[in-house]
Length: 241
Image 1 (cartoon, one colour):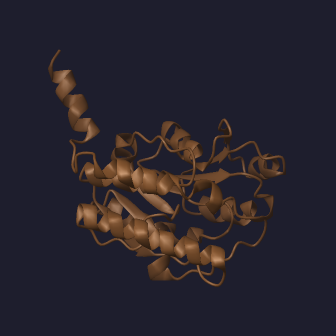
Image 2 (spheres, one colour):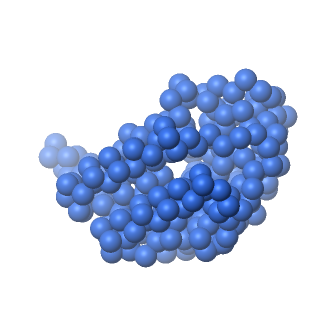
Image 3 (cartoon, helix red, strand yellow):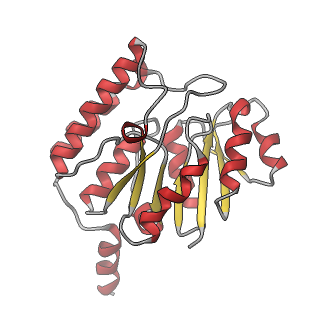
């Protein structure tokens, strides 16, 4: 099965190269989706003959949506460019999909440990909010996930193409989880340690984005719990003609 790895970037020149090198060891295709960085991101990508595609600057969510239209593999892996994820975890992450046991796999920081979720007031709010969101998802769809917000994840092509994502920012992962669970796709997790970033600064601004999560969850609560998969609906439409 062909494996595509997508790295969303925005001024991550200090950490991009080791992430890129690690991904190339495991992937058949690596793509960079860049938010118009003004550093050496493009030069680093060119050094390894990795194509760079530009989003329109709306945020990480837009970059992840664009990736779904561009990747050519059977499995799509998202990994952050800041060095917080270890590309060596990619084989373990894609194994449940290759074995036919999952449609999406998330690298769980709560199973693998994190250097970034404890110690400051900001991190306290992040871990508390993350637990609330995960609890909502587990209750709503009767699953037992531990980390529904981590951007380090792998999807089968069928799962990726079933998504109709709208979020431009960081709630994109939560929206992805909800849409796949509503279509009865199987989500699994592997332990994945989150490392402290080795350079640059986090793009997460809680004061700017926190309200997007409760709005997304409230909207979800009033929608049908389950819907037919998009592929099944497309086949039904084709049969009409």
